[in-house]
Amino acid sequence: MRSGNFFTSYAADMALFRTPLERWRMGLFAVAVIVFPFVATSYGLSLANQIAIATVGAIGLNILVGYTGQISLGQGAFMAVGAYSSGLATIEWGLPFWLSIPLASLFTAAVGVFFGLPSLRLKGLYLAIATLAAQQIVEWIVTHWTGLTGGTEALVVPAPRLFGARMNTDFRFYWFAVLAASGTALFTANLFRSRVGRAFLAIRDQDIAAEASGVNVFRYKLTAFAVSSFFVGMSGALIAHYRTIVTWERFTLEVSILYLAMVIVGGLGSIVGSFLGASVITLLPALIATSGRALQTSFPAVAEILPAVQEGVFGLVVLLVLILEPKGLAKIWSNVKTYFRLWPFSY
Image (cartoon, rainbow, N blue to C red; front, side, top):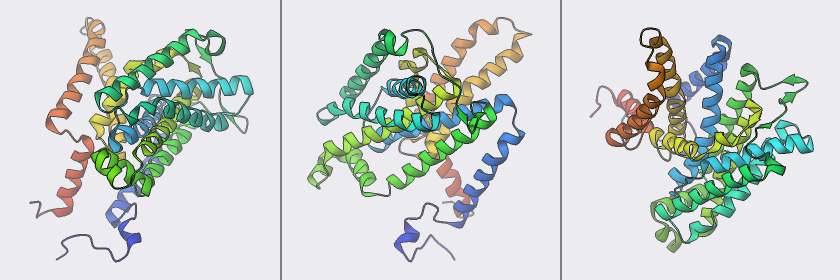
């Protein structure tokens, strides 16, 4: 009787999908992603685009928080850097969106390295306060440097075009957003099969032991900030070109907390968890708003309490996950897969 997965080569052991069932599961998911835009409504496509963009940002944050163990409250700031730098590169330099997005991501990575310098001597709550300072500094620069960002006024970005076609429609942007999310997930999965990724994990588990083992802790911490900020900046740039309007209200401290909730609910140190967390946190307000509109006819007072209900449910979901399954939705998904793989001997 088969009692486990056995490999006869390192290549098989290090494969992204190590069993036929995993390959089938991923194949079915890919088919669903391809078919979805042809059957979904415009509203459904809009939500899917938001989930894909949020997945990019959540994976970027998870690289830093979940995989490297460096707490960050500056997600909104780095997204703002990506959004404004990509938008300004398009407006001022006339660059196409497919070129301004990677350039903005690289610039955000450099900004992330700068704000990651305190990580050499700070950790835990102290590092979180340092990244919170980054959030406040970037917000101040964005709202006060009126000559560059327009201050509190909205920055209008030209609609992205490819071969003459406008790309920020829900259907067309869907493919670009899914490609960005898929590429981010694939890069991250391969990153943590490499020497650099294993160094990140060693720092997360015990940085003193990692340094004693020869890991250059400071260099790899800055590398983690750079890689994380790159993808976070990419998500901000995607938002800028999808919405074509950039305002500082989109990148406040509330956004930083929202993305931190995504990785906590989905599961720290998990790519699947980043996707699940982004999906739940994005769909939850939409579901509550839809339910509120349905009840508004019978109960007009629902409209007044709807914002409070959304915040209350958001906090309740995070609290329940922390109490019932601290490892997040990724752990629940793993338990489900394990149950069916071992059935009927689930013990």
